[in-house]
Image (cartoon, rainbow, N blue to C red; front, side, top):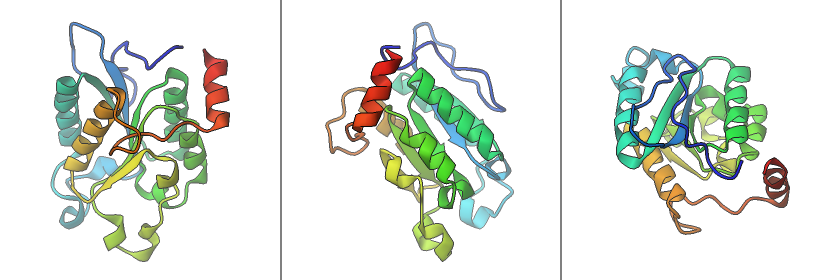
Amino acid sequence: MDGPDTTGPSTTGPTGTGPKTAGPMTTVLVLNGPNLQMLGARQPEIYGSATLADIAAACRDLGAQLGLAVDLRQTDDEGELIGWVHEAFERQLPVVINPAAFTHYSYALRDALAMLTSPVIEVHLSNPATRESFRHTSVVSGVATGTIAGFGPQSYELALRAVARQLNGGAPGAPGARSAPSASQAARAAERS
């Protein structure tokens, strides 16, 4: 495959629908980890009152404006989340990911994300650095293009804007710019083409 998949959104996953458009759009996977299906009911003083469906609708609307077909998915299962990251690798798709609790300990998720050569933006609704000490460590951030945290549902919107900028030639070192792939990432990408 020569570039990112532009066939439009997949309809897999519990909330995986995207905008219907006349032309091809770049698909971006917006992946969500454990307990995020409970947004709106779970600790609204921390996570706010927006539901995951509210966030999905806002992401699809903004995505359409940015030329992105948003495929938002949620799972409580680490293996399923990693499988979706493998799909992003195979299809060369950008990823916005809220790993939730997997942020702090899933080396398997980190290793899967490290394979990606498309933009990877880590998002969090709250700011983990201001919360319990076990939340201060992200094993994911070291392989992400960037991390956006603490802006509630707007974190997802900022991440989509960063993806769009990167796909439209964001300057190296600019906000949202992915560092050059490692030699092993470049070799794997060459094997795929």
